[in-house]
Image (cartoon, rainbow, N blue to C red; front, side, top):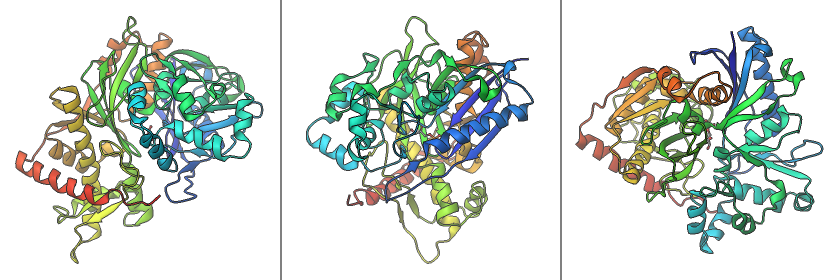
Length: 500
Ligand code: G3P
């Protein structure tokens, strides 16, 4: 019996999953790692800890599954996107802490670029909104602020990568410096139409091309791992950013198919086929994957609505407010009241992503009275996750011109039945939870398995997709519209708050 090992390096934990041929997870290992908040709006990770926890779970999961590397057909990799690592090619040491996708330190730089009139050209080339979310301005910050780093980069001594590149560098003992097209498309430096790094953007952000990784397909042999890591070498054969991998794991292979993943943030992606769609409603256009569904047109694109705070909002209830002991408790607490009593929580802790894109928005709680209790706030947190998703869903329907009739969902918080019911209510369409909620890891496994003949084709994968539960809307249009309008009023109050 052979298996696929999938590495899923997320924002708050490193995970590894072993999948069998039916697409079932046979073993899962997970380790959380430290989040660093050195200043308001800054979020950092220690790239070495990312690698150490990833290596540990990779070894743990093999022990748990009771298998050796000889039984692995291939390895797939998926990762938190945009998080920026810069390291020394000779020593492999990061030159500074990794700047996490949630980090807001380059908001002012983005504003300068916007004021100079660059936002339009950036959007046309990259499909992205000019925002601190993406890697480009984070990399520019490292080059400009870490002493000596720019000169070292100019001498070709440094390597830049998102977390996928960092992991592959480690897994191959520094033999391979590469990224996949889906991760590259999140950097602000990648031209969606040419499928390569864009010299004009490199010049604009003053980034030396020598630091960039080679861009490879999402499906195909990248390299073999160092033999000592798992006892023998394993081919790395598929990789993609975590949201694109989830789209793949949900078998959204046809244009118009969409999924929403409830992780740290919430990310809705819709397959737009073999060409990027320029959004008119503040969504992103991004690479879904390069290969393998359609050999004749290997680049597949997606529209994306990125919501920065979903599961992280529940973590804040747990760690910040301390009104729950563990994340799953939020469901019972929120269900203990029939509504929020007109309380709204706008979790703009890291600014607002799609469709508002306001780096200076901040978390806001409005509508409290002396009758407001923890339960109302917990319910408002769940509603906020659903309402942010609804904003993105409307933008996606408007951009695509398609009447979206259902939404496939996955990710940790999709196991929260109350949240899923609220989601169906505020969307007004069916919310369909897949049986495998580990779709991110599964997507990377599918990419690696397709590249190595473990699965024959996309058709075989589509037949594996199974529904777990369907949530139907229980609200009428009027209730939905009232709720949406009130929510938008709350969002307006959260905006343009931070001064820096
Ligand atoms: O763009 C950020 C995204 O990739 C993070 O995903 O699952 O760590 O919330 P996640």
